[in-house]
Length: 114
Length: 114
Image (cartoon, rainbow over all chains, first blue to last red; front, side, top):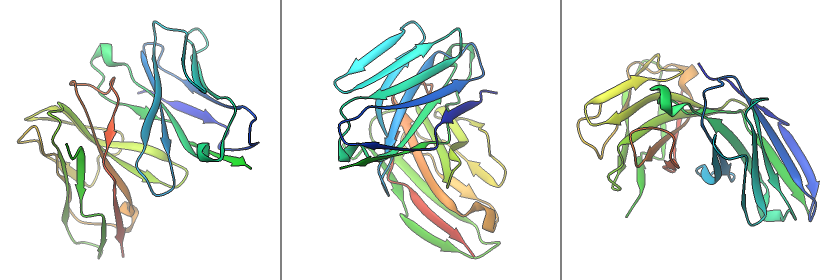
């Protein structure tokens, strides 16, 4: 099955700096890569996703890049703010080959220091 | 719309007891799934369903049963609770019959097994 590794497990940045979280996946046929944000004690919520036919996607201060050859994808947060502090999870799935499982990384705890 | 509703929010069980975690969605979503979240382990898939009457196992299915008699409901049953099942359980749903769509999570059920 799919295996997703996520790094780093913790990340501290100064407010206004950029943050980058990286994930690698094992199944070369995976074609959908979402990112979820989970604030303390809350539910995970989708912040951005990318499909395998796209190399980059941006939404205001958040961007995701995908390198299919290297089987890795990254989350970029620019101009970080204290409210960006949360745990971020990447995930991957290969929906086209009859796989109905979404596999998550172990998460990155991001702390933005005011 | 209420979205994805999980009950109960908190539960304490004794080893060997059984119980059912409830999950209901009012968005007419076909795909529903259950995850458990343990510290440092991310979200691990327990069971999933691509539509009413269809269920399948995820990464960590042992000790759990599910059924999907209606589109709206997807209960998770613990057959004989064990301390290793102490965790936070999340139910999620998405529009189409696969995980390659944004997942809508419930608020979670915090379960402690003594």
